[in-house]
Image (cartoon, rainbow, N blue to C red; front, side):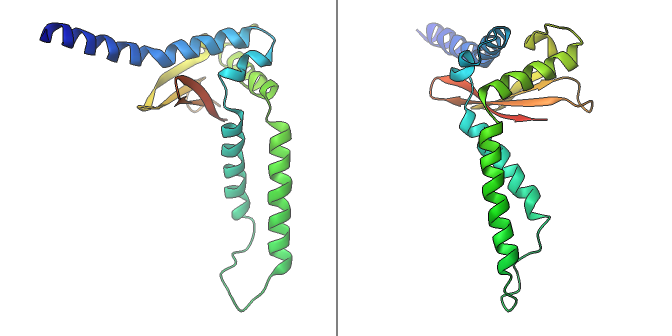
Length: 165
């Protein structure tokens, strides 16, 4: 009985370890077809947009003076920051779409492999777990303009949640 239990545990761990690689294969297949709708189940578009908004706002924070002095009211600066935040968020929502995701991944793969058409799997130089529910893929060589793709386990599916160039 213990032998069977160990075997089942080993099988479950092996299946869990291979699961995100199967999702990468599915992503490669979806990118091979010219239909961004196939990516819909493999990409969490809202998460990608939120990550870009967070990075945009972090970069914007360094450009504007801090609001630390309570005696000095800066309505213009506050208004400018709010306007830039709204405009930036709207631009990100319009710019980051499923076709953008597909073209970004295809472009990164073409740059990494110098092939056309390029297969995502051939452009991957690193793919492994960051944690039990996060998986990192690096397309291209480290330090040479690599694109990092983060996948997260959402329910029963591994989905792309961030693309970092």
